[in-house]
Image (cartoon, rainbow, N blue to C red; front, side, top):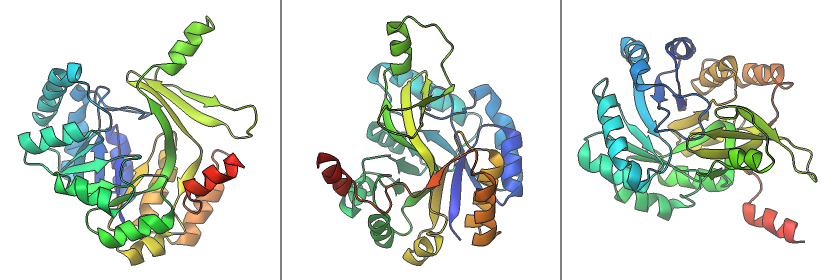
Amino acid sequence: MIEVIVPVFHQHQVEYFISKSGRNFCVSTPFLASGLEHTTQVTDLKPIVDCVKKENAQLGLLINRLILESEFMHFEKEVANILAIFTPDYFIVSDVGVMFYLNETYKIPVYFHSDTTIANAKDGAVILEHGASMIMPARELTLKKKLALIESLPNQIMIPLFGYQVMSKSYRPLLTNYLDEIKVSAPIKNKLFYFKESKREEYYLGFEDAHGFSMYTHAIMDLITEKPQLEAAGLKYGWLDPSFIEDELIGAVIMYFHDRINIAQMLEVIHQYDKQHIFNKGLHYRDTSLTKEQVNE
């Protein structure tokens, strides 16, 4: 079994995931999050908290963006307001400065969730030495490299297992700027857009919120068939990215990694969604350095 952590935004969603054996969740707010399809207003957190407490499940607070110096007073107040409602079992952060602040201010574990920063065991050890309780390595690492990291840090690492992967992120409103340039007016905040390059067949996902623009892979990256290898390496925790994916599919993935359904049943569920989504292994079997060499040729 690999225990999965799942971002959630609504009480009914939490209840559904709990019915599928979910036991570990995190929430975020519009101010604290970047690139999440759904967030929760601070005033709407209590029903989620009550639901999680009732089931003795875990609930963390996700802060997956850089906090600017000019925003820090707002950030401190936001976190204090949230902690007046509930005490998170852990924080998940993407900003080293935020990690230092939370470690100094609260006696709550901090997980470092970075899309690109941690590329090897040495990088991971540095972040752990500076206060993180758990780390997530760079998404573009090959499976072989991730397995080596798991073997080095089996109890202090979580691996992204399923979901659309962030390819790039800008803290500028790129889509808004583009529409302004071509003099087009349209509602774009917190809406999903598709982008296609002239020389590629794939349609990539784009999403802009109050904190910038994020571009995602054209396909859901999954490590479904790799579960036995991950377990053999000692992986205890996994991460699911539910943005732009049906709750029913995420629920099945939770059940699979929690040993409630077998691989044949999981693959059958994926087959049911192959008209809505493309599924692939991302860069798990292709080193990015090799990809670069092929492009240069």
